[in-house]
Length: 535
Image (cartoon, rainbow, N blue to C red; front, side, top):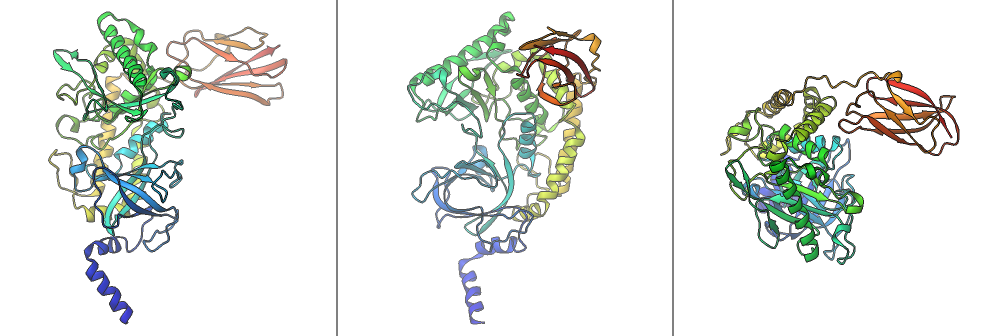
């Protein structure tokens, strides 16, 4: 009895912050628990403060604050992260796993690949808690790297802070943005990869400013930031090389606008640009193209073309912003009301005025509409995420009673969590319908039946390669090529996606030995077969 009285007295003197975590998580959580102790120190915007992190998670079990730390139990450095969101009541954090001496500690957390830089994103503006997750999952499903994500609940200094999303930080890494590393600062800049971004805040030590370009009668310019190599490590030669490459890209965009010269398409991954455009327009992200816009360029010997991504920061997207963005119709790329340094680069107005790029976008939209981007798919995903996070969401909105309370930006304010999810689902379905109309999607991009007598396969006999020639052009869909022997045993298989207006597929033959084989070409509709002799 005396011991219990001492414990109650201790809780009383330590104050309500302990009670916050103990009461809110008294019944435990099915989500991982992140417990941070800063030893009484405040967490600044920067630099990182030393702290201890314990992570509790046993899949398919209830996780309790009293359970042992079974995922991570060690030192971290932690700071508040974000630009406009740092003034919110619920903030996000950046943390670094560290060894006891403060050095980087590369570890795998919750199944993510080993690293030391991590993000705890605190959804506050996004009351569904899932907008970033939906968008990153979509980008990943489209074949692009996007940060892996995991719901969790966060406690800092015994204060329960609600639902967070544990995420990978965007950086060069073989398991993140996989770019050739500059092992030697004296390497030729063309031999390594670069990661950089467009963002608002800037000074001359962080990157460089674009030239000024006209969109209609409006002058536009924007800021570039070095990310890899880092600001304090990038050499003058690397700076000059990267800026010259981007300047050349923008000059080629200007030539496309002024003279219809298509040289810029040699400098960019066109389908990557189209997919990035589709993701940002599908989400109608008001920060698109102008903030948190990541770009990367691999070494010339690997693939020196400019690419966009990874996608990042969609808390205002999917109908979660005031005025124009609240409506499911309308484009984002041609918004001209932002002032420097928040302006959208002029590239998009030029590219979207070019028939070739428009056709690529329409083709990619039709391709993804036939597979990933579908109202029913998103409804199922929203339902699945709700089933995972709903109990924790109730605790989150007890801690942060913001349901039904419009923010200064006056986005939708559902009275319940269910209403927020229903609004998101309805908005997505309406947005898809609007984009279908704008991009002339009629659900007619069904791969045709392949008729062997309409295709030409040559040379036959073949040695190291052969060609499959279509009567017109191949649809821009996956085609699987297989080689069987006469006993129907599969010896080789490869999947290709023909480019726009491609009429011929080049098949590099494996070393199978000489003989008679069956060549099969299959798409999602049907397949055709031919007998081929390999010398």
